[in-house]
Length: 186
Picture: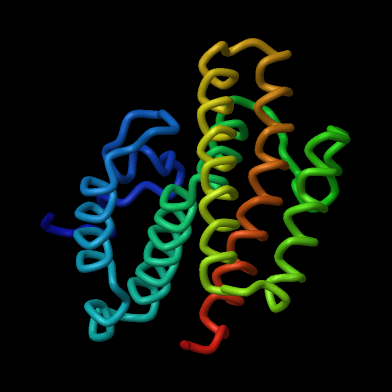
C-alpha cells in the first residue's frame, strides 16, 4: 500500500475491509491477518509528521479498523451486524426475550451459578455450567445461520430474536468465567 489512507474507504463493509465473504462463519486467520495488516498501515503513529489532517484521518481509519475487528471477532456482534447489513435493526439493549422456556432455562442456569459455592466441587460445577452454556450458544449460532440464510423478513426477525438470546448466554458465560477465576484452588 503506497498511501493506505488514500486507499481506505470508511464506507466499506467490515467484511470488505477484511476480505471476508458476508457470512456468519468466518475464517479467523484471515480476519486476524488483515486486522494486523490494516493496523500497521493506518496506525496514527505512522502519520505524526504528515500534518494534522493526515493524523486525524489515520485516527479515524484506525478506529474503523478496531470497530470492524471487534464486531466480526464476536459471534453475537457479527450476527447483529449481518442483520443490520440486511436492513434489519437489532436493538439488544431495549429488546426483551419473550421465549418463556428460554427465560426459565436462564433463571435455572443463574440459580445454579449462584449456588456453586455450596457444591462439593465448585470448580467442576462451574466447568459443567460453562460447558452447558457454550453448547446452548453453539446451538443458537446454528439456528441464527439457518434463519439468516433464508433471507426472508420473517427469518430475519427470528434471527434477531436469536441474537437477543445469544446476548443472554454471552453475559452468563462471562459471569461464570469470572466466578471460575475467583474460585480458590484446592
